[in-house]
Amino acid sequence: MYRLLLPLFLRAFSQGPQVRDFPAKPPLTITLTRFALVAMMLWIMCPEASARDFNHQLGVRVLSIKGKTVYETSFPEGNSRLEWPIEATTGELSYQVSWRKSLEAAVWVSSSPWKSMDAPMEDYDWIDETYYSERPLHDALDIYSRSSIESKSMLFGARSRFFFLSNTFCSLGLNVGYQFQEFDYRASNTDQVGYGPWRDQTTTVSGPVALYSVRYSLWNLGVSVRGTLEDIITITFDSMLIPEAQADDEDVHLRRSRVSWSSCTGSGTMTSLSTVFHTRWGWDVMTQSILSRIRTKGFQSQYWYGDDPATNWFNDTGQRLTGIRSKIQQTTFTVSLGAAYRF
Image (cartoon, rainbow, N blue to C red):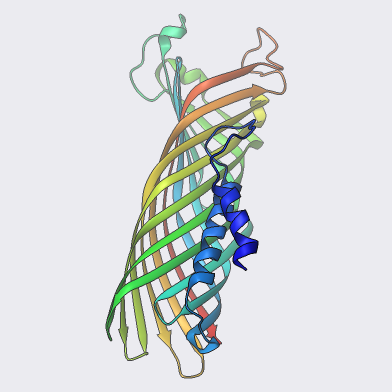
């Protein structure tokens, strides 16, 4: 086994000359490959364990996710902020394996179909009137709009915990994890209000106005504290940093024949409190609450795939703008209830 894995291990971590047509920072696929190879090497170097040392769980749960994605852009003519609410109810399937109550690893996936949302998408625009000679200065919000939206979501995650200090009732350990999140939106039926010199922008638009998709790729690292009471109840508190957060979005503005892409990086925090009630029939009842905050910065590019009606003095088709400053921020609170079978 060592002879088979060692060449792969060395090749994955080799720093010798390589021909690359991408940045030096390894992409996610290479990062995952290295992580998997390290895990394999550590696994085969561990003392041999019997099947009785392992416990498995297959679980299902329902999650309610509330929060908001705030997407801001800044440009010479002003700045804009769009707030996309997160109101998702998803079903989740999970699998967990643990070893001697010291080491555990879990994976899960959840998704929700398209659904109408009660909260609207809100769009705030502050415009620098010095770029528009016919508009007097107005040091306040210039244009506000709200649109009805539909949304769907998909989430995937993996996590491991290692408890290095423990006694009968309490354990202390480290945790590391990865999450991928995607939220998709369809916006329609916009009510827009203009203020001050922009009152003439007050209007109502019926029908589809925008498509929006945002994806988050998150690595987290933190500490875990676990308490156990006579194999009846287990409570685990996780406090985590998100040192590496990647946020990418795509915004198709249907009424202006324009599509925008943002790529941002940043960090965040996450806290989690989970409770597991054990039964004598091999089933566990699980609850969990998670608070997450993510802040990222980067740049946006815009492309006009057709003529923009807002600039009727020339044809925008094929025009492109780059280097627009962008921020993507997310705050979510998740609660869940589910059950898992031990085997």
